[in-house]
Image 1: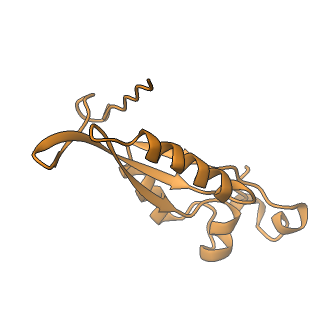
Image 2: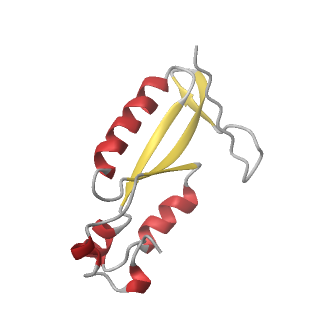
Length: 116
């Protein structure tokens, strides 16, 4: 049997409760940062694990956000403000690998390269 415990240490140190069919169950917000390269494939498998752990007793709200080289090419920032806000509001962050090919990484200014 797998036991999973997440706690809202920012406030009370206890799980947040949400109503669910007359029964309260903890609800956790998880920021999902897929990253680059094989990151989205890895995160898809990690999300499957979270869904398998989710039950009548716990709920995970997944909030996807851009991060890494893919974020830079879409927004001009490797760690956009929207992603920062999602991470700040989350109970946990699930981050995939980042990194691009040598040629692609040279298209991003050094101060914006997510690996740094």
